[in-house]
Image (tube, helix red, strand yellow):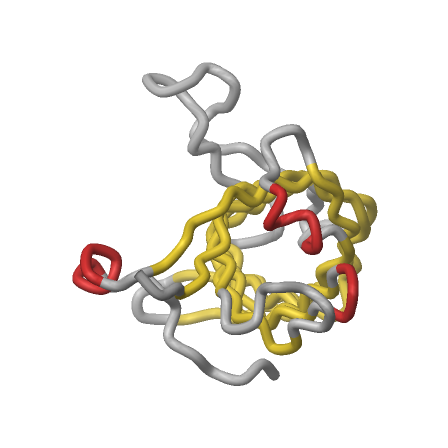
Length: 192
């Protein structure tokens, strides 16, 4: 489990603190492996949920939008994702887990990944590429702290990013290959 830290999301700190922001843009490809699943029923209010545990293992490569500062983040990200689905794995859900991101030159980032499952936020009126219910999609936010900088210049930095990952859906929660994107920033404190 990663060391707990405060994710850099305080409005006053964003306005007042001295820090550098650099783009992070990664393509993701890997595996989403179901390790367990169990149903839970409530009587009042009446509902049924499916709770699953998945191992997420993805390789990360830079895109044309990546900054020079984010090149050392090429590598791999692993997480144990816990999801609670409405009814079964083909319905909407919420997921969370702790991740480890291993980059180039001894870089290690640890943090939390959390979001929604089987949703389509890229729908009308913003975009027309999804419906509100998009099976086989996890999306959300990850926030991590550089735990080991290795030979990089990222000591003390954080990574905040949005992720979108496609998987093969099923009533049991999905399993198999995944593709996706991670788009965000590195935040590194500086002296003004």
